[in-house]
Image (tube, rainbow, N blue to C red; front, side, top):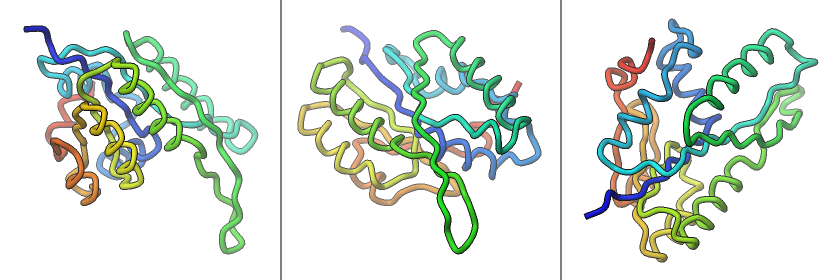
Amino acid sequence: MSKERTIIFIDGSNYYHILKNMFNDKKLMEFDFKCFIKKLIKSKKLIRVYYYTAPLDRKKDEKTYTKQQKFFAKLRKIPNFKLILCRMQKVKINGRIIYQVKEDDIHLAVDMVRLAYNNAYDTAILVSSDGDFVPAIQAVQEIGKEVENIGFENKFSYHLKQECDRFIKLRKEFLEECFN
């Protein structure tokens, strides 16, 4: 019997902020995504990993922008890894200017459904704690595909947990093994 074809979809902004909160004392550049992917995939056949995020504003903070570009370069070296860059939008909230990643969720949802419809995978692994993905998950399941949700012990979506075929709560110890 052939291995289960699997695609991993990572909500990059969501993942980054949760990881940063869990490991504020460690440098996130030292996180080994190859190790993380291998631990998620287990014995399944990895087709591809999609990572959705947005580039920071270079003018706002050159140092952080440069760090992010190095991080992107590291990701691009991983086999079967596709970095999907969305846009960053400046928004004024309560008189404060903040930056928000835009279009990442819709790109991820469309890719998940499109690739399921094209029979590119048997199982989708969604690394996110964002319950907004439930309609995309339902569409993928209607096509006959399975969806696993990888949530975090300190933050996960009850709706994702209920809707997905499998839910795995990532614990800090699991992630610590992926730091160089």
